Length: 420
Ligand code: HSE
Image 1: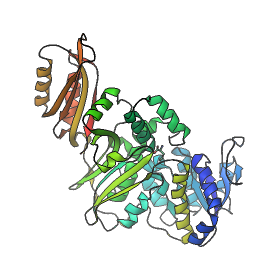
Image 2: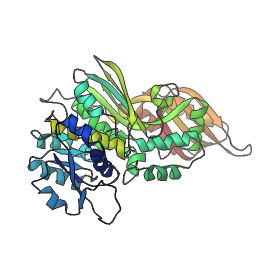
Image 3: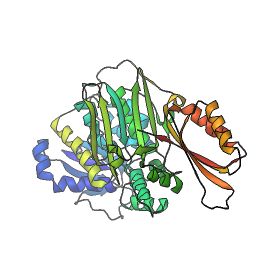
């Protein structure tokens, strides 16, 4: 089986190398050899370790070649990648992609276009963890109750380093980029968008839901401060960027945000670039999957597993449905419920705390715990930390808005959810 790789970066290089290095076991499992024939790149002069694979800059010509059996799309981006894949599927050639942003926007069209052509996307979620096949095929007997995961390796790498201490956000991000974990635009990682793209893919499989990134709650890790880290450590929490899908009756809640997670939870122990996903099904109960969520070799492992499936002639429905199911709707963002953590700087004066708790009670927010810190004895400001009982997102947002316009609040207010 002859393969073209569209986009030869960290993952494309690893795919070419592993196909050559592990050729004999791959051939035995696939029933035929899988050969990286050509890679499409922008710059032929950039040094690449591709085990002798031929390189070309002519994407259009490679897309029209008759001697290519399967195309692996690793270009990234949405529009260019969609156009290339559409052309390949129109030519009835199988596609494998790792492109989660593309799938977050075009998975329904791609499911239609690939109805009779194999389309693999195992590498699009959680790098080396085979979560697509697990959810779509292994757990296909179940109603999925919930999915909760750490789906962005870069953010988890950054949060782990920050919790260990002594490192600056920018320096850790740079290291994650050097290691090949981060997206071309790393705001996708730290802003929560990459995790949201992956959550949408998983929730399409779990719930046949057709949401887009704009429809769901997405917050990143950029505003987490050393105060939040100190608070988390003191009260035995880890801070994790979580992606959560939960079925509640005929509705599904989808959200991505940093959360305080009690230290003893399994997901709190997932560190560095590792990803983990807990999936609860009505028949199977709770299951959990763990592995490297980013990096060339781990992602190439998933890409090649799709190539092997195609060589074997396996072609399941892309999102796992041969017929539509009764549609489920999204829980509106404001109706999502959780416990909240707030951090704010206030004027250190008589009556401020009473004013804040009054605003809280007017918005159905009940304080569970409260802490005040003052770095300097002579300072006229104090930092307050609140933890609430379970409340609605819309009430927490309103509470923040009112506080922001209050004369006793200094600077920004930071809010984070607590996930127990
Ligand atoms: N930038 C992504 C991450 C790569 O850090 O998880 C894997 O999708």
